[in-house]
Length: 549
Image (cartoon, rainbow, N blue to C red; front, side):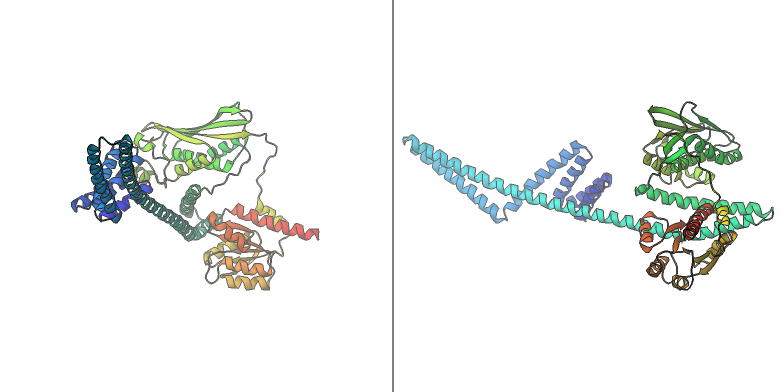
């Protein structure tokens, strides 16, 4: 038990848990002392010296090192009595001492001899003494080297084992998120899809509040799942920048406008200030900036009732077209206590359990905000006082660029209706009956005809027997999966457009979709305009190709 605790202490020290490592080493030392285990006491002293050196507590490190040195010398004395090389060394030393005495006697008797004899005698004595000391030094050096090699080997083995555990934990986490994501997003596709359909089918006034509550709950769950996935992507460094030309002033105005109704429900007034003498158009990742603003402004709205929120944008530094812009989101809400401010940007962290219960939320928003700002090469900090409100500041670099093209949002549903879609055939491959019905209704509303099958084998046969323009392929199905079905289809049809209509969204799975032969991926539950855009692009390209012939 003593040795196990000491080795556990070494492993904890390698993993950075120094306090736990010290505790484990001391427990092992106590057991060793109680049972007079000299070897384990020596190992514990050396390990404690290493840990305190690592934590820069050099006084304790030196103290334990001295104890280690004393007990090591004691062990060495005991070992010399039982090891053949040591016995030989002791014999040599005893012999040399006797020889030295004899030579001294001879010197006294022969003082009248020549100086040459005296010099020869002294040199002989010196040579024997040096050889004795060299033998002892080599022996001790060999012991120290052997001990050092053993320690290095133990440390190396511990490090390799820790790396293996970390890699296994990472794979387990990714697989868990993949499974949970699919299991949650699939029923959410049904909830959000059916809710939107019912709201579009002129429900009674009594039903509308219930449907809106259902829609809110579905959207909340989807946001929570997406937040968890985004945290995972940020931690895995898989978030990529997508810089484009955009109007920053308009972008912030749109975010404030979209959140204004929520503020009004709390009887809170929003104020927006954009510095007059700075440009409005920049090159940057506007989607990530929007997400940061939505999280921070939404956070202020949640914790501010009967108050005010100020959103300010201004430049704090510029060199030519390169600007450092500061964004401020200030409120006069409940505020954050001093002791809670340091942990506000950690995952699943909120002011308190009572705040979580009263105001809701996952505690992931600020963690995502911090991660996104760091990806944008910016920084964030806050100023708050309990009961008087909170101000979040974040600064990011942006490059000015003149606006040359006005982007107009297209209605792809109307665009599809303008195409000749009379001969368009779409195959839905989906094992969930509710999801089949929802996808079919969405297509039928666009006057698109479709067939439905509920497994991969049937999908392969349908594609062989019919001429389809698009296949919407689910991934997880009984029998062969959507990936396997697509691989089979690609052996005899390379041109057919196949979309992966799936709840799997982790980036480390994307290469599997590419290898299987999918043209694109539509994540469930999807935004209808995104779905319509992908369909339109394929159908329009197909008609243009036909017109060329």
